[in-house]
Length: 427
Ligand SMILES: [Zn+2]
Image (cartoon, rainbow, N blue to C red; front, side, top):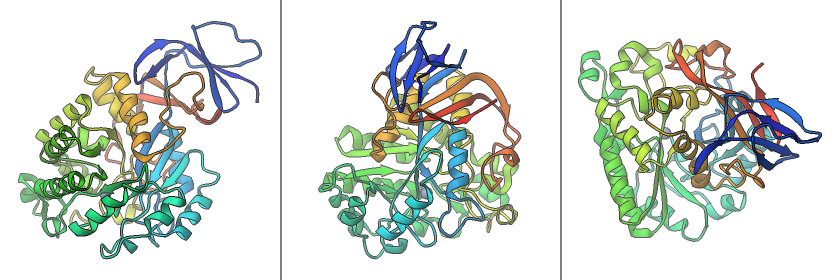
């Protein structure tokens, strides 16, 4: 492969930004040079006016394979991720069968072999996500799995959670990720418990259902010294526990979703079942706290919880429709529109929370590296001023359930390169 040069853009890394051209040779970035410098023999790629940043990393996606491929499969999910500027994703294990043993991990890896992004998978914490018996951590770790979670459900048993956290001490890079909702508090609930759930006459899921699990788990992380990550944190209440745990030196991280940074339960009336997800959309108080935490560093990462469902399933009523929404194709644009382009978050911080930090949390070597000589050529090129309208029917997903349908977003991914090969490019 001959050298390629991304010309005319602004390179944004965690530590700052500057106008520069990026030279890629083979699967590596070999040089970052002053704009306009001649590089003999290189193929020019015009990225004028665009941001050139590390490929994005999404550590919480549901690609529904195996078992749910009428909603999504690894191929369609990964195609959407590439269009969203991502070069690596981590699948959640709540598939059918559940990803809880080496054989299923190998099946997933085989299905992901030709995907345009690196598709990694997590494993369940407990066998078949039943919360009764822990999986064989050592065997799955040896197979390359680093993230363990019963996502979709919480691992409710505190004793098992303690054992899982203790297991991380012997397996470097292993992390226990938790879907933090107490099952006895959210049973029968469809959306956030409050004035909106009361007005709509549907069962609520209280904010405290998240708080009690996070409070318990960070205490166990402190007790064990184990490594713990909060999936899709949604409340100011839980964030306060994470903040304190970090201050106390516990090995705790957390992520938020784009939707929890911009939507509230008041939007559910307008969105219908596309606004139903677990944890649910919360309140303005929570949105403000999550935004502030993301900018300040208390929140470590943005992850989408990309959760496709077929239209027929989402056509049911709020109480019975399945929770979740599409995310991979809109994530960076939602963050850009609502935070970066409004000056609430710097482009460098966006790179941290959308690429560098999630790659570190999930142990994805080769991703989240700076756009700099020697790094793998995993790159996202985004036009920060281009506006576009979200039209789910034109997306790569097999499903349509985006709450951002019809919205106009600012900031659009123009090109995604993985290890020197363009995986997505707008004409
Ligand atoms: Zn979850």
